[in-house]
Amino acid sequence: MRKVRPLTVHHLNELLLICSLVLLVAVAAVRVSTRSGLPTLLIYLGIGVAIGQDGIGVVFQDAELTQVLGYAALVVILAEGGLGTKWREIKPSLPLAAVLSTVGVAVSVGVTAAAAHYLVRLDWRQALIIGAVVSSTDAAAVFSVLRKVPLPPRLTGTLEAESGFNDAPVVILVVAFSAQGPIDPWYVLLGEIAMELAIGAVVGLAIGWLGAYGLRRVALPASGLYPIAVMAIAVIAYAGGALAHGSGFLAVYLASLILGNAKLPHWPATRGFAEGLGWIAQIGMFVLLGLLVTPHELGDDIWPAIGVGLALTAVARPASVLVSTLPFPVTWREKTLLSWAGLRGAVPIVLATIPVVSNVPESRRVFNIVFVLVIVYTLVQGPTLPWLARRLRLGEEEAAADLGIESAPLERLRGHLLSVSIPEDSKMHGVEVGELRLPTGAAVTLVVRDGKSFVPQPSTVLRRGDELLVVATDPVRDAAEERLRAVGRGGKLAGWLGTSGR
Image (cartoon, rainbow, N blue to C red; front, side, top):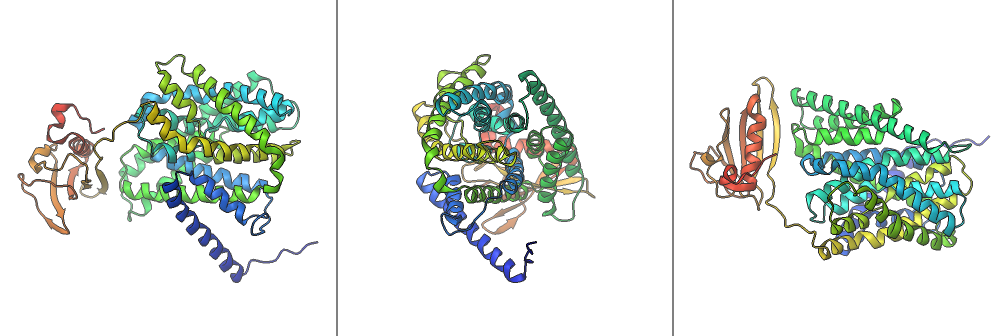
């Protein structure tokens, strides 16, 4: 019997050193990615490959551990994405995103599986697994790329909501296709998907609403506790949805979406904390996936992966978009962009570990094909998406910068202290304090300018870079923030111009 060596302090120090160096290299890689346009996920995968057995020599073949850690990372990434998604942008896009995530996934799975069966000569089980695995757009890739492309809110909302929704049906399909024994009939799979999505939606909405309700009414003793509480609620939504035999991925995304639009106290700190966790999750997941792959085994699967990827990109994705957009007034330019913006990333690679863990025949080949496909088509699609948006004239001019507003509850005084930062491009620049026309019960009590603070008069002119302290009672807190945001977008004539602060 092999004796397991205990983890000593020396080993822990070495592990911490290696992890810290990997994180620093990954952070530096973001800078390289920004300048070169190369997607960061490829750089992180490259780091993992460089550390692996064909690089430095670290041997890692634990697909089950990779799957578990990958799921945990996806929970954090979906939570961060939901927290950063604005409800007003995705609300008009929800019906289309829901159809793309269900009907569109079904079309994509069928077309891609047929291509894998007839082009690569895989049997139908392996072909269906590949079709399901690569039919999910990647939340991390979509969130990171689209937020750099000034698209109309309708398109951005559709793509972000789709990437948050379509993980759930795809996971169900991959698990069903990877199970031992015959595959269930299509109507059974359809019923399972509908039930799991419904349970996940109910759990996510309920936990998100309850969490937001509690955090808005309980003053925690330290501002640093709010980000921890928000992320804990998001993870509870995932666990609750999964334990209820529903879709945990849909639950965590919906709960995070509610929390992110609930105007919680100390929101900038929460947003920064979630974004940092999201980066760590992405880095860890991509590096781990790079470690799992064996590059010298990929040679025979390069051309099959390119063939399946071509069918997915040129036929399956456009077909799914065309079918899904039939009930909606979508222009041909928007359909073209939606077809090209079906970005893949770590999600398909993580899902490709499911058949490996389930010991499906030729599952390692399926994993290799998916890995190569993601690498090649991410290199093609990611950098060209901004160019295509400009060619289709779908780029949108940047609007006035939104205000940074942080809220701290004053529980004993039954009020809120709003900290307002006026950015460079805000139209609040040049507005007098009296022209803010805040509701009765709210007032600007302090202005910090150039490091000095003073109590403003109604005639005090606000400037870019100012920080304001606004005290508002509970009943008018939301109305005060809404008015401040409206003035930030429309200036002193915001009410006359119809500019909303929502």
